Figure 1 (cartoon, helix red, strand yellow):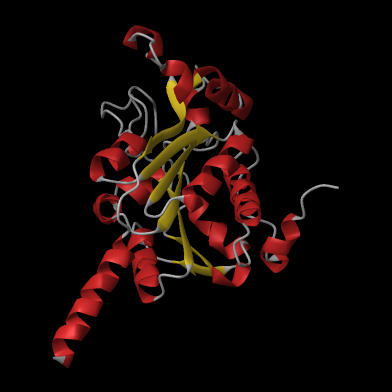
Figure 2 (cartoon, helix red, strand yellow):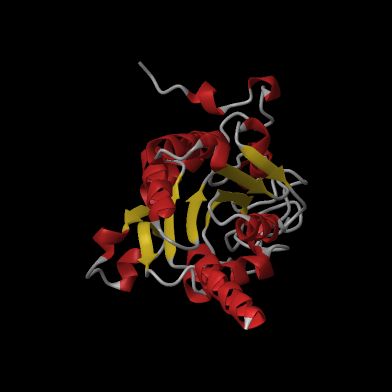
Length: 276
């Protein structure tokens, strides 16, 4: 018998808004399976999002959910985690939501190493608002705001998270659906900030403007398959062989003190001083 997703979905919110071929449904199903596999209490899970296509996900999920303002998912998620550190707080964002308007929140949440598991569905475009270039749009690609090709070099979201201090960073693609689940489960197990970047397609807003490379959304999934290389397979390979490849798997795991634990020490110290 197949997995029972309906246990974790709000049926009254269906059908979803995502376009045929979108990878966001794959991400949502992997997140559901990961929560189930990790044995998290459904009533103790909080899913927070900002604005964008993937940010509609909390509306479909039967947990405690917050659909907040653009770029502010991690700010709200931080508030939730600080208010009750025992909650399992999950932030779901797109690439624009996470590292454009939300870029400063992203950097400082990584730096604090607060216990939030963050899933960034990176489809390299602003899909909901008109197909504008995002911080991860590849060089040369056409968008509604770069009709003659994108001249801006893209962010590497995972590398940014490592540099900013996140204790767990992983990356995969929507083609590797089972790996998404495994990486999220590993993120839950990390005591601190966990980033799981999932590279996925947006054919309607991105692919169709780049027909020379993508005839259909299947070409976008095929590209994910052909360019992905597991981090274990990169060992000893010269940089020339890795050009054009996307490294997937656990890219960084360095346990360090979690922010709410450290803040509790401050509370205890302040309480002690006031009682003297």
